[in-house]
Length: 562
Image (cartoon, rainbow, N blue to C red):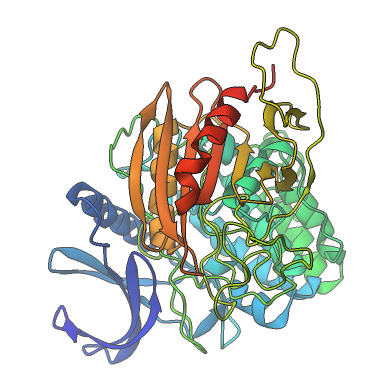
């Protein structure tokens, strides 16, 4: 196929939920190029398709501003049947994520050398007024010729003329690599990009990000509540990680100090302060970013529904400038984040191979699927009696607390709060959770944690109830983005939407989908309007009606922290 009378498509090297990437030949200049094509799914409305086209053009405009050897170059944008196709430099390569997956965590010196190249690309972008906003191992290319390059500017924002296309409450980026202030407040800054670089380097030496959890919700809960995971293998890179992953952006390393520490880690020799590093009357002591925060454009009220992240993979042996998904080996990725963002604190907006947010990285072996515990109950968990067919390369569960087996410890009977009027039926107990909430559940149920999400499950029926801490995102928008992300990630096969609507100041999403076993699950995600806590309820589809009374009692008994 020849497009624009010039670019002949040769091989499909990447595919995702929203687009494809081709290796192509420029017949005019006789060189290989990478061509990114938009392929909107059939379920998108016209205004959503227009949004996707706009985001593709944003990527092109951001990349066109940059001319740096560590940034994948943009050559052209052509229109094909009304949709823009991006023509870029073709880089035979692997992503940093591919390298870690195939070779294991990197030695600190090698990670530091990669970090230096990415930092150079970032500083070039920041100098040009471009914030990348999606730095992660999948967007760092390690070329076959030794170059390290930063790619995928689909979430970038820049000064002048083209807004961030953000709505209040929306945050862009993959949850494991989003800075805390961006997750909490939607703030995009140079400092936030540098935090994401730190998280990427942490993943390079430890095999996973500093906030890797089993679901995006659990990741974001951990990001909001606690420090990053330790990095016992960081070695000489430890001062860089400590400086870049500071929660307060004002205490984070700036470009120059980060570069000096990375050089020390890469070479083993201390790099003395340069003239530009030394303090002066108009320059503070090195080490802190100290840049004013600029929030994502609060005035952009574009009403489109966010779209899913394509997570376009790369072909074996070669990589296009589009990130590949995780293909991690078992054991090293037991806690890697799942695909679907039932987002706490955030929302999702997507483009093609570049665009998105809060979509975690798809593992090939979701937690628990290949190693069921020996004490499996007779009926198993909601996913059925054992691992799915073939046990590998299947979508992860879309929500926290969805497991192939019922696990946990018995709930402990507590006491109701003073003045509590609800009286649970016989056999039910009050549970006082470490997160501060109280809820009444049957005494025979088991309780566990999925990251920071509290899970409750019935060993006999597999009925599951989850509680996730609240955030500031609009409830209906939060659930819409969860739906869009799940659809794009392939985590809800046979998706049947029953309800997605505002309710009582919050919102509710009820749905059915087919598991890898072939059975059907039925679920509800309800965001409470008063405090934004999210309650989840999941059963086998055939048990939905029979479980309704339990759900009503559990829901009515939920008491958030005072």
